[in-house]
Image (cartoon, rainbow, N blue to C red; front, side):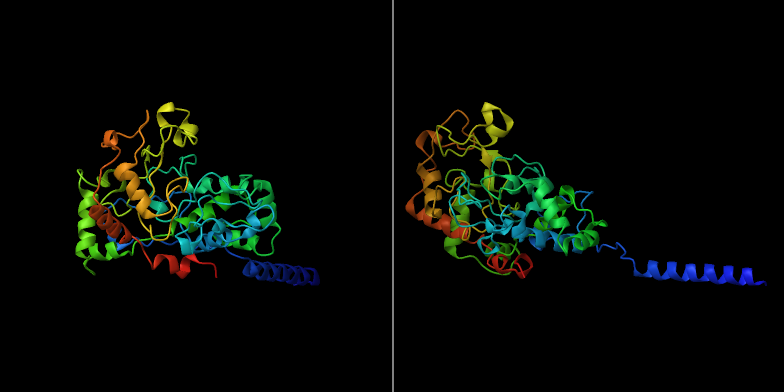
Length: 357
């Protein structure tokens, strides 16, 4: 072998060695796919959760979504995160009648609680159903001038220039180039893991605890079409979501300052209709209704008992509208309230998986 051949051999050997070293140091995209932990009380009673094929759950995506959910830099002045209006200790509400944004301006809606969102089969979100997926809904509060008052481009730039986020996005999605689609996917992944299914009533259904006579009688009032008649919109023990996730005019007003779904669809027949909230965690989510008008659960029960207001779009399920409501006795009201409070999940509000760490 002549000198030229020897030099050429060592040149290619060195080149291959360098290439091998470089490849071994490259970050490899290997996401850890996870299955949603479906509660036992859900498994035989309701359909499987809605997980989009283009946004499967991964450990990295969920962790990134959680970090984003608690990141105040998503707001224009860095003072408010998603958790500012959706606090885990309040079942992901804020305890106010109206949420307050970064400029100390009140909105006109009560903050909806966040849990069991993966089972929203209608796939419409917010009180008025204006967004059609979890992935899309996050940018409504971010860009709303009354809420976080930011722009999508500002959020993307902020995250792209952060020392941590590009690597976290690579671990979650295989790219360090951040955009709004991936931000929405990450937060949606985290929100789909927010599950409440360990209330006293859940444990009762699983045969782990007993209900009191008062709570059982409250369940009877709830299920009785001639008394509470609550189950049409809010389900029963075979629908442990305790909502139909559909939009109803439940007789709050006879003249609408807030058109609700009607504003979104433009259909007058939808005026005054709002999404049915879950009855889970009522112990933590006051005040109630889309505008937070009722400060106590007693006021809510009084509304359905004798406070219904008639209008052109009143839901047919409000069958006792002609007499103002279902006309419960005081004892029936007390019993109904006792049952409703069994739907509150105290473990949920202290779950470390949902709190900032």
